[in-house]
Amino acid sequence: MITSKWSDHLRPELLSLPERFPRSSTYDPEWLLSLDMGPNPLWQLEELWDDLALQPGQRVLDLGPGRGATAVFLAREAGVAVDALDLWITPEEAAQTYRAMGVDDLVTPQHGDIRTVDLPKEAYDAIVSLDAWEYFGTDVYFLRRLVTALKPGGVLGFATPSLRDDPYLVEPLPSLAESAGFEVLTWHPADWWGKHTALTGGLTDVKAWVPPDSLELWQRWDDAVDGNTPMRQVVRDYLPLGGPPPALGLVHVIGRKPYATKDS
Image 1 (cartoon, one colour):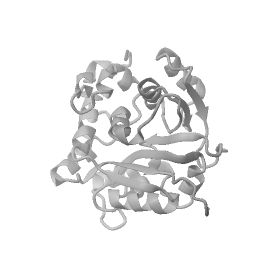
Image 2 (cartoon, rainbow, N blue to C red; image 1 turned 180 degrees about the vertical axis):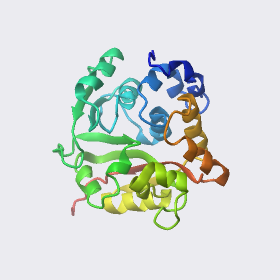
Image 3 (tube, one colour; image 1 turned 30 degrees about the vertical axis):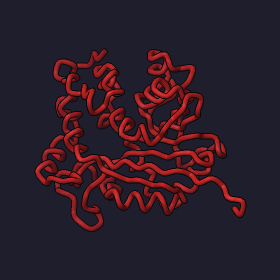
């Protein structure tokens, strides 16, 4: 349960959307808010869920799980073993979440920078990353190295902030430019992310989309945390710009590592 000084102002009831997110809505919203590091990561993961097609006993790398909500979800909902790698949260802090949620036998917290850590070759059935990809994913050399850790036929799925108009071509609104700084230059539209993922990762069956209600969901999360985020004004500035796709949202991307051919 939440015990911070902000608890009286939170609105956890806004996080229950059983028709839109049946799996996520079974989790205690106050628990989820206590792990807050950005827009609802369980909604992002559930948006990718059917395409991930995870099976019990598989091994998954979760990049940037923060305080651990997505790793808990992966372990409980799919019965997979999770290596939860984060740069900002220590393994000791994350382990408290996994023990409390009864998944410490399936989740291994790790600390490190995915750009420099040693990756086991063809070890993972899936690699997922929710609202962290913007910190490393635009590097044209990054994905080839990461994909070596995927088994042939393994799946990559991620979600990251996205603008309808590429920030290199159309100036972001002043509130976003001020809030995000240079990071906003990584908030590319869905078609950019789809092409970038296919080309730099050598992946197949790549899909990239921004859900039509993405910005409304972002606002809902912001309202649940009482708007106490730097993005509060940004979300409100972008809502009137309409869609689909929304002018601001979270792009979701899925791709698969090809099976080796006889000639490869």
